[in-house]
Each structure stands twice: as C-alpha cells, then as structure tokens.
Image 1 (cartoon, rainbow, N blue to C red):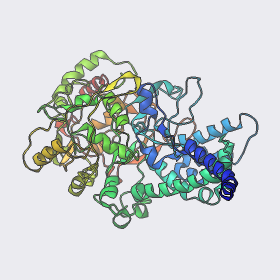
Image 2: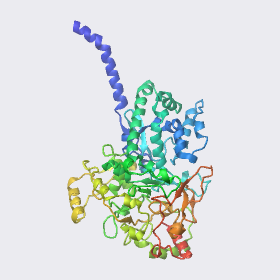
Image 3: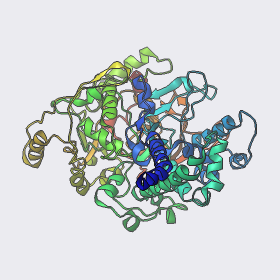
Length: 591
C-alpha cells in the first residue's frame, strides 16, 4: 500500500515529464528544408545543407539589419539611405506595423546587393534570392545557397523595374559578399546583439511579427542568439581574412583562401599583411601576401554539359585557372562557400542543380542587333577568337577551348593564379575522403529524375594515373582532379554580353574596353549597376551613383589583384581597326 501511495504521489511528476518530452519531440525533432516544385525556385531558394551548419534563425535574420543598423551603415556606407538608422528607431502601431518593419529589414539587405522578387500575390518576398530556409532544432533557419553568386538583374534604363529581367546563372554582379560577411560578423559581436538580448533583439523580433511564446522568448531564442554568435565566430575564423584584403566590391569573391584556412590551417592573422594600413591612402602602397589574394569575378554557369568535353576528348579545365576538370568536384567545392560542409551537405539537392545547369541557356541579347554588321564580325571572330573560345555561343569546339593558356602568353594579373598553390592542391585531395559516393537516381523538383553519370577514369601516367585508379575503387566524393596550373583557362563565351566586367578579376568594364590595349583601358570605373550599356557591351560603369543617389563601388585597377593588363596585342585583337572591332562586338551580342 505504501508503494502504491508513493507511485500515486509521483503520478503528477510523471505526467509533467511526459508532457515536456512530447512537446520537445514535437518541437525539436522535425527537420527538413522548404521544398519547391520547379527547378528555378529550387535553384533560387533551395537548401544545399549549409543552413544546418550555420543557419541563422529566420527571425534573427529579419532583425539583424534593424538591431545592427549602426553596423550596417558603417559597412554599406552611401549605398544605404542616410536616414536608415533613424527610421529603424521609429516604431509604428497598427495591423500593418510588422509589414512595414519587415520592409525596412529588406531595405537594409538590399544595400548589400540582395535581390528580392515578388510572390504569386504580387508582394515582395521576405527572403531574397539566394537564401534557403529549413526547419531545424525547433526553428526556421536560413542561409545562403548557390544562387547568391549566380543570379542578377539587367535593366534597359533607370525606369525599367528590373523584376522582369532576372537572369539565373549569370554572375551576381550586384551582390557584395565582402560587405555581407563583414556585416554579419560585426553584428554578431555588437552590444545590441549579445548583451541581454531580451532588451533589444527579442523585442525587435516581436515588432517584426515573430509572436514568440514564453518558451521561445525566454529559452529557445536566447540560446539561439548565443549559438549564432558562436557560429559567426567560426565563420569569421575561416572567412574573416577578407578584412586584411582590399575591398572586393560587388560580384567578386576570394575562392580558395577559404580552403587554405579550412584544410590546413593557413594562419591569415599571422601571415597576411593588413592592406588597409597603407592602401587606404595609397592603393599601390598597401602590402599583401603574394599568395594571399585570390579575388575573382563570379563566373556564369550556363550550359555546363557542353563543358564536359573538349577537342582531345577530355573535359574542359574549370575554374579561372583550370585547376580541375570535373564539374562535380567544382560544384562540391563551391557548395562549401554556402557552409555545406561534409557532415551536412545535401548531395541530392546539389545533383539536381548540377543536372539542370547542363542545359540551362543564357538569355538572348536584350536589344536589337545589326545583323549585317554582325555577319561582318563573324569572320573576324573566327580568325582571332574561335580557337580559344569556341565557334560561337553554342558550339564550343575549338583547338584550345578548355585548355589552360600559359600566363607568360596571356599576361593577365597573376594574383589569382599564384593564390592557388601546390600545397593547396595536395591538401584538397583530403576533402570528402571518408564520404561514400552513392551513385543512384533520385527525383528532382519539376518531375525530372537525376541520372548519375558512370565514373570513367581515363588512363593516365604517373601520380595522376594512380589517383584515378584509386578513385575507381574507393567510390567516395573525395576530390581527385585538383592540380596546380601555369595560367588561366580558355573559356567558351556563351552569354558573354552578360558577363561584364571582363577578365578573371573583373578589371575591364566592357567588351569594347577589352579590345583596347591595357594602357587605354579605364584605370577606375564603377561596379554594381544593372543598367546595360549596349554601345560598349557591358554594364554602365561611368556613373558614380544611381537615380536615388546611392553610390556604386569604385574599382581601382592599381590595387593588388585588380590589374587590367594582358589579353592584348595582335593575337588578341586589340590592334584591329575600329570598324572590325565594331563588327566583332556586334557578333558577340549574338552569343
């Protein structure tokens, strides 16, 4: 009887434990990304898995530009409206107050180059293109995906709304990753974010329409705030080296210095000079690590299937320096930039994008083309360009297409080439070494089925041959084709009219400028404009600000890694007479 009495006394406690356990299971166990029913939306908003590793809770993402308005103003500068910070301190009442508050948050992110599109009801989405969302650990979490670097807009003039000219697969020439990284790193360390978040961040979430309950307000979100602070600290250790480099500007990234830090602990704080100590006043005086500047433009990613074979039957050499010839490995390494680390990467999601990109076409030229003049430019192109860049914008055949052009002949800025070292190539072979490759079909958004290719290793001599032989046996995702090269790769020119600025580091604003000797190319110009310049074939690069007075980024070719030399001389067409240059430019518009 005494035992029964004790059990009866414990009954309420057991019920409470059961209720708490059921709540915890219901709240924290469900996990999965938001899924989409077509490949376009999957590319724009689908998860690569990185939001599992460093995903920012949805409401914290929305609140950060408001809570850290000072930080955003310091980072974005004159691309942010001068009264933005003051407006974040003004709160409204009424049913539409959260809607207005979220619009203010989006305005902050737009200053960093994020692109928002409208939903089916004609309202602007709360998340921009290039941001995925997933449910994890009881929260909706968001982070960047592939589209953040490979989607942008084109406008005919300042009155064009731009929303009808969204282009998937083109370089994201408006998005400023440098500023975005600095914003989230600095915000996560700021007093309003870290000190007593119940006083600042959580009330801001409520003003945005978060409607947090007691558990969220006093337990889940305070813990999430500290966890995100630690995640941003980790990211800063890996990617924070950019604070020592010249400002990248929009549309650019340092691709492989991240790998150096992540793979073999490159100590950028110890080895990388701070360019800003001298370069702030004199761009040429700033000190840099000769192997520590790998800043390049993001490439276009159309028609990837055609890049799987060149004139000798091998795949084309990829990345700007041609350091890999396997699309799959190139894509996996690009996914690392979205925090899709080996333990969390979503291979199926990435494989669906990979297959979709094989046939994704660049859009046709927006303006009229003088067909007669273009026909006159065709033989000029065949004589000067076709061997290295393909017969046209869809036929990539050419003797040297997809091969590496030696730097001694090309003469372009060497920093990106020197940044990718032999040591890095060796260490990259350890990535994904223990992750089994599962060659299988699986469904993709829109009803298509992913069909894996058979991994066929072409016989090779020496070390490369031994690595290929091991690859055929081990069946892992380990990188097996990275190597050090001596130049930059000759690339096909599909959609070349949309790939401005030009050269690997984006140092030449228009195709017309590229056809000039380096001494005649602009020393400085402005980046980040999406208004097209049909005369010079590129984006408008001479305007310092947009119609609203917001400043564009001034690109200076005297800065280390920004050199605009090379790809010049008789063989490269820079000595052609002006009438032939005009005809060549018109023909390139057809690509």
